[in-house]
Amino acid sequence: MSDYIESTLGRDERIFHTGRISLWSLAPLILLGIVTLPLVVGLVILGVAYVRYRSTEIAVTNRRIVIKLGLISRRTLEINIGKVESVQVEQGILGRLFGFGDLIIAGTGATHEPLRGIADPIGFRRACMDAQSEAG
Image 1 (cartoon, rainbow, N blue to C red):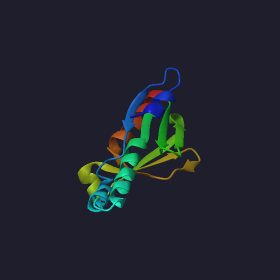
Image 2: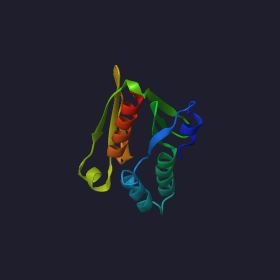
Image 3: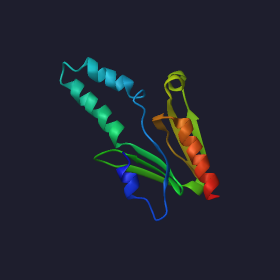
Image 4: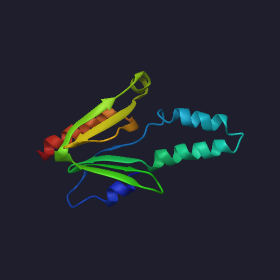
C-alpha cells in the first residue's frame, strides 16, 4: 500500500504507523455507484471510489508525517515530526460507530486542511505522539 512512502524513506527512517481511508467513509459513493451500475456512470463512480481508496497513503515515521494523495496528479505533504504542534481528530456519530474520522495536522506556523475519512484516526494521533516522544 505505501509504495510512495517506502520509496521516500531516508537512512535509518522507519515507519511507525500507516493510515488509510476507511471504506465506511466511502460508503455513500460506493452505494451511489452500485445503484447507478445499470447505467454506465455507476462503473465510473465505483472507479473513483477505488482510485481514492488505493491512491491515498498516510504514514508516521520516526522523522515525519507523510501524506500522498492522488494517482495521476499527485499531491504530497511531509511535516517534520518535531514541527507538528497538534493532531486534531473530528468524528461524527457514524465515525465513532464505524471507526473513521477526519484528521487536522497543524505544523509550526501553518494549519493544514483536514484529511477526510481516515480509518482509526485515534491510532494515527497516538502514533504521532509516540513518534514525537521518541524523537524528542
